[in-house]
Structures are given as C-alpha cells and as structure tokens.
Length: 566
Image 1 (cartoon, helix red, strand yellow):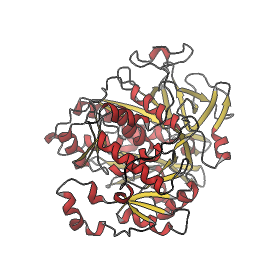
Image 2: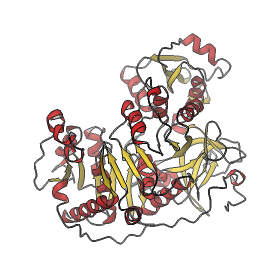
Image 3: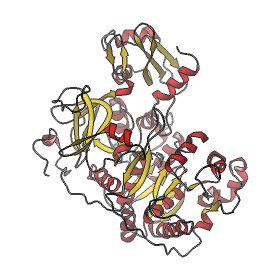
Image 4: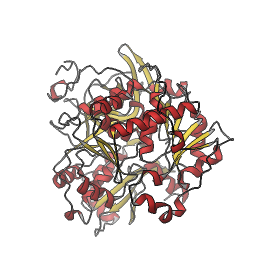
C-alpha cells in the first residue's frame, strides 16, 4: 500500500486496500465483455426465478446493439431507460454503451411532466419501457410532441419464469398495455430479431459520455450529471476494491435498489458485472419478498439504504428465516444509525459499512473500511484515488484544518465532467486547483485527525433560527437515541420571529408510544435550547421516502406546505 504521507487518512488506511493503485480508464462495457469471456456459463441474472447466463446475455446485448443501430441510434445519441429493475434494463444499458450512445436514466415514478422535461432536456429520441400503464402511458403522449420518436417496449410476460409467464396476462389484465407494433413502437422481440452483428463504437473513455444521471431536483429542474466511461469504469473498480474479500465469479448480489439510481447502477449492477457474478434481481422493495429471497437464494452482497436494513431488523417474522449468507453490506443514501448497523450485523453475521456519494461522483466517494475502524456517524475514508477536502463556507476556496466544519469537496477520477448544457451551474460547483478540478458537494462536514469525514448536513437544509445555524441531522441523531423512535425527519419551517423554527416528524416503533413532553425531557441533555424542536408530529404510518427508500425531507415539507404549515 502506498498512501501519500501528507494525506490525513494515510495512517488509518487499511493494509488490504491500496489507495494509490493505478486504475486504467476504459470503456464501461468492457467489464461485461471480460465477464462473458471468462465465465460464459455463470448465471448473470436471476429475475424472479428466470435466469440468464453471461453467454445468453452477451447474445441479447449484441442483438440489442444491432437493433438500436437499425433504429438509427449513433454514437453520442441519448437512449432513455424508463424501466424498473429487469433484464431489459441490463441488456439495453450495455447495448447502448457498446455503440457509443449515452444512457439517460429515468425514474418510472416521475410524473408525466417531469419525464417530459427530462426528455426535452436530454434530447432522447429513443426510449425503452415496459408494457405497463405506469410507464408506457407516460411516454406515449410524447411521440410527436417532443424529440421522442421511438419507444422500445419490453413485455413483462416474456421475462417471467414458467408458469408465471402464462398466467401473467390473465392475472394482471389491468397492468398490461396493448402496444401497437409500428414505426414508433418497437417490441423488444422485434428489436432483437437480428444476427447481432453490430458496429462497435470507438470510445475515448475520458471524453465520451456513458450516462447522463439526473440529480434529484430538490431545487428547480434536475440537472444531468455528465458521467464518462472513465468516471464509471474507474468508480466501479474503486467500489469493488473497498471489499477485498470478494471473489470474482463466486459472489451473488441482491439487487433491490433501482438501477436507474446512480448508487444501484454502480454498486449493484456494475460491481456485479466486474465480479462476473450473479444479480438476484427484484423489481422493487417488498419486505416479505426481500427476506424470503435472502433465505432462499443466499446472496453474499447486499447494498441498500438504512431504511431497508431498519425494516429487516424489525421484521416480525424474521426468526423463521436464515440471513447469515450475507458477507458484506454497503449502506448509502442517508446516515446509518449505529444501532441499525449493530442489529443487522448481529442478525446476519455480515459486515455492514456506511459510505457516501453523489450523482456527480459516479457516485462512490468514501466508505468505512470493512477490516478497520468504523466510526459512529462517519462516512469513512476516501475511496482509492480520491481526495476529500474541507473548505470554508465563506469564501469556498480556503482549505480548513482538521476538525473545522466547512463544505465537503471532492477531487478524483470519478468526478463528473459537468452538467449537461448548464455551464453556469457547472461553474458554480467547480473550482480549478493546481491539482485538478475540485467539486463542491453542498454538504457541510469536517474531517477528524484520522482522516474520517463526518457529514453534518446539507447546506440547503441548514435551519437559520434567530441568527443561529441548526443542522437537522444533529437533531435527528439525538432523537434516534430514544428507543421508541423508528423513523425521524427534522426540518425548518418559516417563523415570523426567528426566521425559521425546528419541527420533527416521528414514527414510533410498533407497540411503542411517545409524547412531545416525554421526548423533550429525553432530549434535554442532548440538544441545546436553540436546537430543541418547537413542534413535534407523531405519525402512525411510515414517513415519506424516495424510491430507493431514503427518508425524504423534501416530500415531508411538500406535505406540510400542502396543508398550510404546522
């Protein structure tokens, strides 16, 4: 291991991980070509019981690539995927990359207007979806009214195992759309009805875009982060290197996080392919299905978000199932409470570590070591080849010493090229330094003496109350110490006197109760008077979450606004 001595994390970096290892930039699709060459008979995809080997998948990817070229898709064209987790996503993803097209990921739960805006912004002429009203009906009106000209439609029936494939059209009559097979609508079967003899594109990994990954859009129109083949292929290797105990060709990955989200795209799909291993693929998160799948299919790797691990910890029927097949779990998307980590590790025998990333960084930036110290509340040490710096919140250029709180900034080979067609927004998040561009994350945090980074909160989520800055995450962490609390979100609401005031939304654990007075008494020695929430709302139903299961401050504030405040 060779870690530069001037980096704070040098003395704590695990000996099993080489921070300075050279990772070559290469076309992203080559990770699949390597796996198909070395392990053609290995099961690649297990989708609800229907399986595809690497060799079978290679054929379908080649046929998909030829089919896309037959539709007129050329290098640098954008191909949209409005798909839940399914074999269609994987085949079209690698097919588009092989011909030099750029993937644009779409959230199937977006409203039609949100999808329309993203289609127009990205310039997608071809998109793929399923023959389901939830997805197809959102695309059909865009033909002729936007740049979208062709929709590739995969039949759900065709990717189900027997006998589900026979029963599906009858049992799910309302969930199946009759799609015309015409110039604008192309079935996946027709797309792949060819010999697979496509023309490979010449890829410059450092310049050619592999994916336009749109940000969550918490403020204004979502922005398309331009991720090159180098960004994603290198970040895939960086992510794999964080788990030195994995064995190529031998692992199985539970894929319940949606692939259109950058975390799952890299940490689930791309890492599995790099490992020439199997994806046990589920179309969405269903607690019963996930627990039963772990028990039956025995995955060894399970990236997820904290709310999924929490749900499993509290699953009432958990004693019936054996989850001790899992070796490593990688938590991202939100802070991982220490009790959730310890409970899950005790139940499964796995190593569960918290990491951190952004759409703009492909996404993995850091992770707690699997064979080293895990610090409570920390996002860990920088991934191989990654530099984390803390800069002043005032001038955004002054580097701060260890222990001081400022904006978290990133340098590394996984950092995006910029935002699609938004030069001003790009300029706002980048600083040029003698050592390369520095990305401003918008997160507030600090680095301790050992090089572990701690995220305090998002800059935009800071609550300004009476001249004081309050970080919602600090308040949430204090509330989570109460054993009766299962879920919590804290945010600032407008206040005519203080500017903003603190409110907490809470769901208690099953069978537990809590009042505002009881919680205030519990928090008295944990929060300052200025941090103490002035309003509490206790809910019996789960708090709103994003599609990947992350508690959503944005959605809860939208609910609050819709009903007129407190």
